[in-house]
Amino acid sequence: MGSTDRPAPEEVVEIHTDGACSGNPGPGGWGAVLVWKGRRRELSGAEPGTTNNRMELLAAIRALEALKRPMRVRIYTDSEYLKRGMSEWLEGWKRRGWRTAARKPVRNRDLWERLDELCRIHEVEWHWLRGHAGDPLNERADQLAREAIRTLDARESG
Image 1 (cartoon, rainbow, N blue to C red):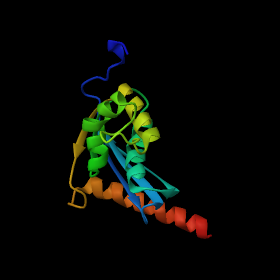
Image 2: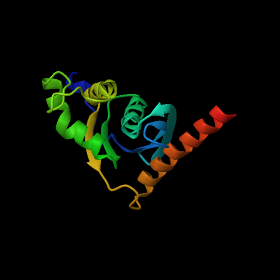
Image 3: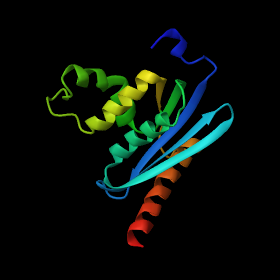
């Protein structure tokens, strides 16, 4: 990427993400709240047979995919798995051929690889926050994820 492809400093989007599962594995949902220049956009989705960790990753992926050009991004998540994966573990996994330190295959490799691609487009900072601790946008992302599961369940039973 050339220097003209880098996001302008004032172009920072804040993204709050969350994933949820009814059973683990089971029906799962993800939610994301994007805030940029005072505007807010909400995204969500669900899958019938998945895990909480996959939904946490998918929330970040779908939010980054929704951006129309390279941006500076601050992602807030209550998932240590997502935050530590991107800020601590990813480079080692890639060096070891997508193996953990214990030499086992990395779970959810498909999603980690997609997230890594997106983080080469956008300038992403990862922030962990405690879940269900009253942060309004984190609570909203959680609500979106849970609503997506309910919508999926209603479609499947109807």
